[in-house]
Image 1 (cartoon, rainbow, N blue to C red):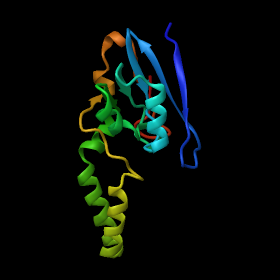
Image 2 (cartoon, one colour; image 1 turned 180 degrees about the vertical axis):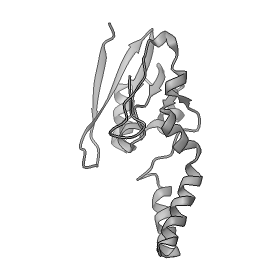
Image 3 (cartoon, rainbow, N blue to C red; image 1 turned 135 degrees about the vertical axis):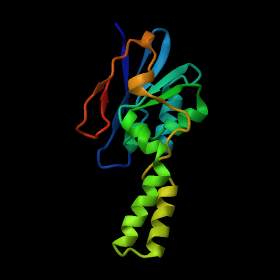
Image 4 (cartoon, one colour; image 1 turned 30 degrees about the horizontal axis):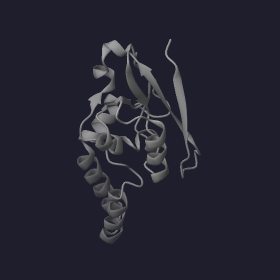
Length: 163
């Protein structure tokens, strides 16, 4: 049996605190979800997760409060990060998606000045944190020796996965 530790991290969002979970599985430290991209979130992970031993970060879905620290963890650990397939499409097509959104807004009459301001907000990562550069696909690439089964559970988001 695997013992999971629940981590509760405060967020500045209406959802309030969020949870992520860690466990040692097959001798390897695994983190499920990352918490929000805030200083408090990073500090919490730094204090409660042994980043030198962290080997896997498995994301349930790419909402800001669930994957927000993925890039931070990518820079501070040797962990492999796993994203749901549908969210990997968002990551790989990010620039195209953003360009399409701006084009739609421009077609609806939003001014160039407004769109430039909106782009600056998005560039801060406050609304949509960057995706990690190196990631694997959760449904395909989680190592078998971990014994983690992946079930699609669309609802809260189209990409929701249950492990």
